[in-house]
Structure formats: structure tokens, C-alpha cells
Image (cartoon, rainbow, N blue to C red):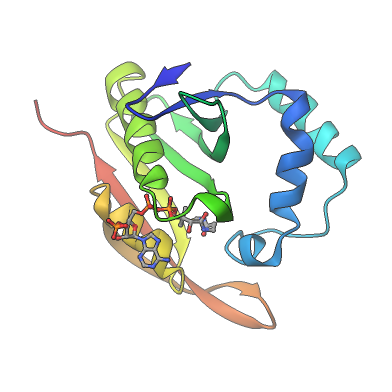
Length: 172
Ligand SMILES: CC(C)(COP(=O)(O)OP(=O)(O)OC[C@H]1O[C@@H](n2cnc3c(N)ncnc32)[C@H](O)[C@@H]1OP(=O)(O)O)[C@@H](O)C(=O)NCCC(=O)NCCS
């Protein structure tokens, strides 16, 4: 458990998979993800089994500390130990919990874990250039834009730009 002031990040359990399927099948959410196809619970279960074999890919659910209400999820993957970097992603805050600072707290907890526990040096991410809410949240967390992958993803019938953002380990 990674514990913050209001929320805690815990490992994903099999019993959470229906919730994930609901999120990933919501057009307002999946439009911001690079791959999407209508997702069944059975398919999500296969993915979950594979995730259990991967020691260096993390997906956490964020829940409130008081009621243990699930408010979202966030992940860290693609760890490169030689260059001490990884990619943050799979960020979702459930629609009913937005604009309460949860994405910011979740991001802070993951960055603290990445820099302070895993001893990484750099955390990167990719985000649709049109995803203003996510870009604003990442900017609040100290991520800086490093480049634009022009027309990188074909989604919703057109090619869309993707921004590369990164945050370097804070100097101590
Ligand atoms: C992006 C997302 C995770 C933000 O979650 P959130 O919990 O609402 O964000 P926070 O409340 O922590 O907001 C942090 C800052 O981000 C900015 N922000 C968040 N939502 C915003 C919005 N809809 N419009 C403009 N700015 C926004 C604000 O600057 C906010 O600070 P403020 O509330 O003090 O002004 C959420 O909207 C979401 O799940 N979207 C769908 C999935 C998605 O796009 N994931 C990212 C994939 S890369």
C-alpha cells in the first residue's frame, strides 16, 4: 500500500476487474487511450493473469483512506534500469470523483515511489495533444513537454498528435 494524505494506492485484485471493464468501455474515457476495442470481462481476466507474471509493471487502484472508495487507477511500466527511467500511464479518475485533486495526489504518490523507492531518474508519459485535462494535471505534477509526435495515433477517424512529457528526479 502506498499511502498519501487522502488516498492510498493498492494492488489491483481480480474483484476489481468489472470496474476496469466499465471504465475501459466508456467512450469518454477510452477516447484518451491509444488502443481500444470493446473489452469483455473474460478478456480482462486473461490480461490480469498476464499482469501477475510481470514483476516490473505496476497498476494500482486509488481508494480513499477513510471509506476505501475506489476513485481511480494509475500505472508505472516500461522500466529501464540501466537508464533509470519508466513510463507513467493508465491514469483514470472515475467521472464522479474528478476535480478533487485525486489525479494530482495519485501522480505525486507514483512519482515519490518512482524516485524515492525505485530510485529512478526520469519518468515519462505520452498523452493526446487534445487531452487538456490530463496535460494540465501532468503540468501541475511538474512534467514538462519534450516533444510532439505528429499524427501519431489514428483514432476517431483521424490522425492525432501525441505529446511526450517527462519529469526528472528532483534534485536533493
Ligand atoms: C485527466 C484526469 C485523470 C484528471 O483527473 P482529476 O482528478 O479530475 O484531476 P485533478 O483534480 O487532480 O486536477 C489537477 C489539475 O489538473 C487540471 N485539470 C483537471 N481536470 C481538468 C479539466 N477538465 N479541465 C482543465 N483542467 C483540468 C487542473 O489544473 C487541476 O487543478 P485545479 O483543480 O486546482 O485547477 C481525469 O479527467 C480523467 O480520468 N480523464 C479521462 C482519462 C484520461 O484522460 N486519462 C489520462 C490519459 S493520458
